[in-house]
Length: 421
Ligand code: AMP
Ligand code: MG
Figure 1: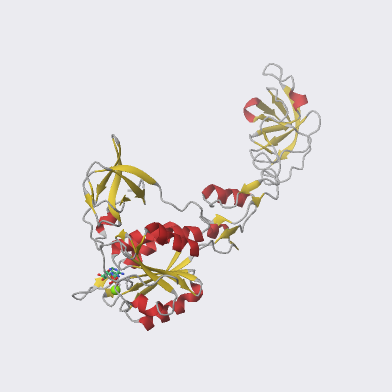
Figure 2: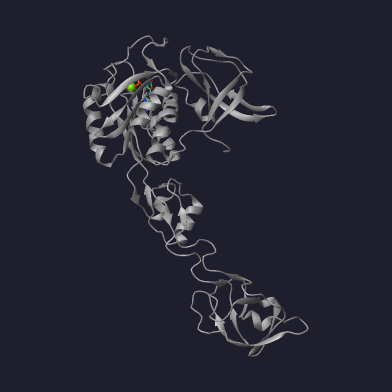
């Protein structure tokens, strides 16, 4: 790496810090969409199409009736009316799912169900409501021009048309369309499998009761949820002690199944920190300080070509770092081009103070007020206060240079969820 490790003090000066944009650019420069794979439709759901999918056949593939009734020749019912019905001979039945055996000749009709193929010779449908059946014959009470109530071949999609464009995410309607068109294994960018590790001697799983001073691992679960929401497949690798060899071994053990790694903790103070100790000397991961609060210390690099995110340990820092750096990278790996959260401009409901020289991400609830969007902070600034994230739906951005954004001032808010219970 071309940068020297940043200075390890000066936490409140801008010295040795890189901007959020610079940190994002480093990450995004290093990731690209995963190599496309053909996946079954249920697996491909939510993935991005890696090609223009072209219809190999017309949809529908055969003309069918849009009504229950009688398939006839338009010429035979041209003068039909309730007073002077056209009387035709019923020569058969067209059923859904079968090629009709009967052929409609002059003066003939075939009973037909909605969705059944139009029998040869017929060109229009008279609905059952306008028919009176009498033994072998049917009286039709209205004229029907050719094509009425006939669903023509290719009405939905013409052969050769693009069903789904390259770059399009396969949502519910795309999946249905592809299924209908017989594209059962579309070529998509697969979901990245992301191995999640928590580092720290103090950590225990959430199923256990902490001894004094121990902490339940929350970061793995925050990251798990965030990965799922982004469309990735998290693989929880558990807690790794603050021991460089254990971390290295664990990471290497998971290498074969990982498209990326995320660890939390162990990137801040110095080489005492486990992620640094494990990977800094190998030159795999760069460690730097970003001019942001929370989430200043960050590590990012590649282990055998797989992106490795070394997030800080504090739970709020993890969430914010994920939003800013990991999520856009995951979306890029998924082949998505829309990788930004929506933003709104909102009026602050209370003062927000932050460290000068850093971008402050304040957890807020953003809501529509009578006079535009209003952002209300959800609590104190401490980066250990995960409940302030749980109550929030947005991150208000207080730019470097502003120490206190006063109540009533306008701020940009990244909205990370909307319209939920
Ligand atoms: P570190 O950067 O490893 O020193 O961690 C910073 C702070 O975050 C410490 O107070 C840790 O106890 C805490 N922390 C680290 N990892 C986790 C985790 N997985 N869950 C909850 N807290 C954590
Ligand atoms: Mg730690």
